[in-house]
Image 1 (spheres, rainbow, N blue to C red):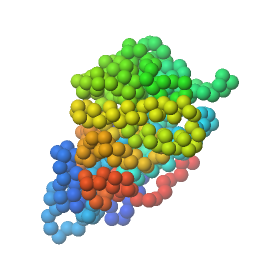
Image 2 (cartoon, helix red, strand yellow):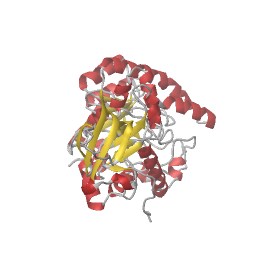
Image 3 (cartoon, rainbow, N blue to C red):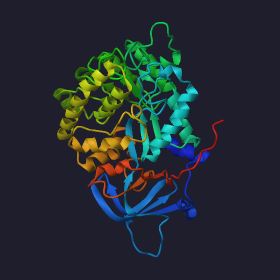
Image 4 (cartoon, rainbow, N blue to C red):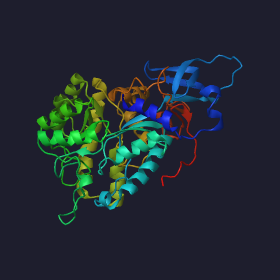
Length: 439
């Protein structure tokens, strides 16, 4: 049973506490939505004046609106309706990036979860009904937030989570720069491993902790002091060991990889997707296309890091690495679009404030995607990348009823997605309301 069928079961058993407007629930839990235009992201077309019928959590039917004397329960006749958006690279737990290298260990687990709940709600209100949360420093805190959302204790998007970064000692997934006098708690080192056998052991431990996939730091990181984005940190046999161990339970590996050689090693080792791919070369792009590997390229993020990092005095080493990778990543993204490489929308939310995820769409269009392609990357393509497209990613009968509605024509002006949309998640209309206490 996959994560999203478990989500459905949990909501049925526990009673999902996402709050609704009074008009959102019709007789026998049927909701009729009138949509001015619907983006068919599978067919790449616009359907006008549509009736979407929702039974419980799922879409029952979609077709032209017929004047049968029936009033819609939700009237979006003046809006563009899309599937709920998917961000394939987020970090909901803890505070957003800052210049303070001590920040991760200064916070408690409760602090991380408190902020995570806030970030989850901001992300959902921005129209992102599913996120792939690709790692937190404190092991399994993301699992706890995911499970809170599933049970209805917290309002937020569906989450797929990694549990912890699998990283070499002192690598891109470690808390570093603290000095030898600062002890790093064990919960921050749950994924630290070196050598194929050690990698298999930490991956097995993460899988036992009920993670949805494995996140491996295959190269150095822009935001980790003392590591270089272009430098591999795991050998190919170590990445392959992680892939093989994950496959035993039907799970997969996504690799953080900036550098060209690290990207190619990860592809050869069999990872499902590459995060960042900032310095990928032409050979790597060709390999990604040939293997069907998904690239998740956060092409907005570099501008935020430059602006806020310079303003707030982030370490010069981080700003230098950001400068070294931003333009190369954007050039590679444009090449990937032209080559037809699999691309899924992912932003690295958590480096920048949560809820601003949709700012990346305009960058993707500027770098060569059509508006429809950019939206597909955050809907059906992202769902395919995660093998959840039987449940999510498009507005089709039988799928989970995750929908958003925005003013205006997003295919003419993609930036309209940056405005807070109306949101239906699991057949229910999101409304501003408090959730019950976590005490």
